[in-house]
Image (tube, rainbow, N blue to C red; front, side, top):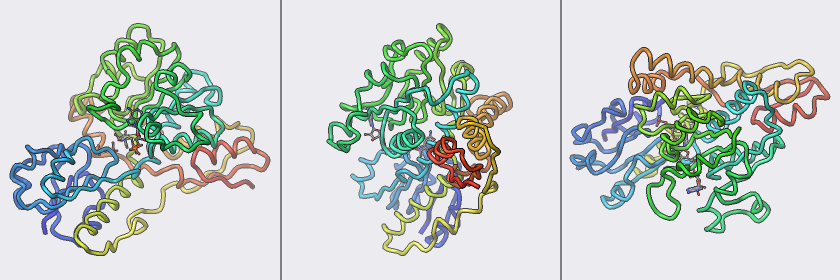
Length: 387
Ligand SMILES: NC(=O)C1=CN([C@@H]2O[C@H](COP(=O)(O)OP(=O)(O)OC[C@H]3O[C@@H](n4cnc5c(N)ncnc54)[C@H](O)[C@@H]3O)[C@@H](O)[C@H]2O)C=CC1
Ligand SMILES: O=C(O)C(=O)[C@H](O)COP(=O)(O)O
């Protein structure tokens, strides 16, 4: 059995070599001829799996993507051809929520406001948005959600129903908008340019717009025009239209601009590989002998001791940034763009991504009596002990 794997899939040998011969190719270079004698294809989000790619794939029986998003895969075509398909739902959702909280906290520090005073609107309340809402609520931060497919399907528990509003109501009521929708091209809940020029124009001055879903969910031209013209809103952008050749002017206008790495914790990537490995084993009728614990190393920073009197927001910033600081990725993107150009620079940041773990790997020791700080830190996802 031959398994063709994107070269950026970590632990591919540990997971997949027991099942067959593993051949690696850079994800953007996987071409129809590479699939001629391949039985299983394992990709991430940058390989478009469509009729053109599968033109010579006579032996292909399984496609797996080690990502949450599936907009790069023509799953209807795979079903039509009897090719099993698996993605990795939720694999890096914790990492995306870490990214959101530390980015908003960084922006709050830069712009001189407090997270506790803001109302956060979460668009798309699935694995990522749902976890974000749960952490915000545990921290006591006011939030609203918009998820029309879930509302229509009656999939919102009654005790949460009051928090779910329409997108326009959410835009009107919130200071911060976090987009966590999949890219859906058509249908009643299409998300392409969900934030179109009209909605971008309707954002109140001072609004923070964070997009960690898919770049095409926001009209980039309109956002660039608003940021450059009125300059009265702020953007945190991890995803972009036309990746990897992104809009340099929009990058320069964003407060935090990162190269589609919100979900790039080692934990999240390894979960993705492992989930797809399990699916492939299941498709083959074989047991999966590797566990996630076998793959995950000990975190480089397991503990942090904080002194008294920092206050919840400063303590939170210190703890979160000790694990992951998005300013590193923001700076790396500009540096790599200067060194290699737009598309190659974007991809270089992602291919050589430094080790990053999730907040849950950190234990923070606090002095006794710092109740509010302890609540914020625990709510944000780190583990807390008090002396
Ligand atoms: N920046 C990054 O590194 C990452 C980005 N992503 C993106 O985030 C997306 C969301 O991830 P998950 O939460 O895990 O997916 P999910 O499938 O668990 O949740 C998505 C939610 O969005 C809702 N939704 C769909 N269309 C909508 C619309 N028109 N309006 C409002 N809500 C809508 C769905 O009902 C669902 O509840 C992924 O599809 C992927 O594109 C995911 C992981 C990492
Ligand atoms: O899981 C998803 O969906 C994502 O957006 C991934 O984090 C993207 O990772 P790459 O496929 O671009 O490595």
